[in-house]
Amino acid sequence: MPANLYRGQDARDIAIYVGKCAGNPNCGVTATKSAPARPTATTTTGTTGGTAAPDGKQVFASAGCGGCHTLKDAGSSGNVGPNLDQLKPSKDTVAHQVEVGGGAMPAFKGQLTNAQIQAVAAYVSSVAGK
Ligand code: HEC
Image 1 (spheres, rainbow, N blue to C red):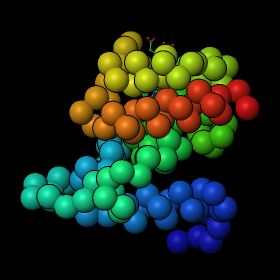
Image 2: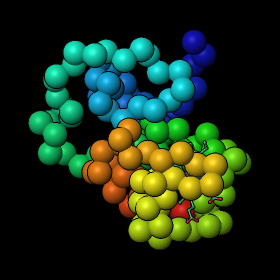
Image 3: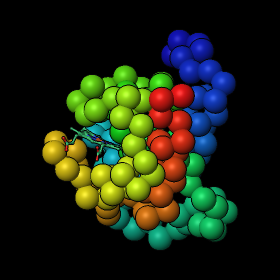
Image 4: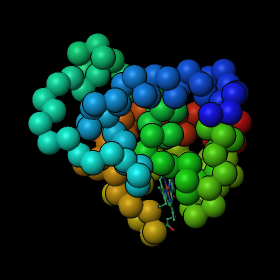
């Protein structure tokens, strides 16, 4: 594997993500190439008992938002959906869109927890256009 594929915050995010999602099908991964579901996981939903607020940037990455949306802070350049830096959606707009989907965008309710949806909405609305 080539060195320095990701640096700094990205590398940390990936580390956190892998640490959190390995063996945990409830971590919010919706990637198309995700591992087969493990049916019997009854373990934690988070490393600290499920009360820690999810990291919105991490949710953005793990849910695959960047595959369809450009968001500079997340380092993504997808162009299936609107460029979020230009759109600068409000938190409510993001949360609603993620929850119910719309147009060619799938709904994430059921794949992301409410807390994850709120976290990604807060994240996107706070960094879009920055
Ligand atoms: C499969 C591609 C795809 C993925 C994955 C995706 N989106 Fe979208 N998104 C779209 C498309 C297409 C639209 C435009 C929908 C429309 O025309 O109504 C859109 C619209 C939006 C909007 C604008 C809503 C509005 O009212 O203007 C926001 C905000 C948004 N997406 C955020 C996200 C976030 C956050 C994620 C990750 C949880 C995500 N999207 C994942 C394709 C995607």
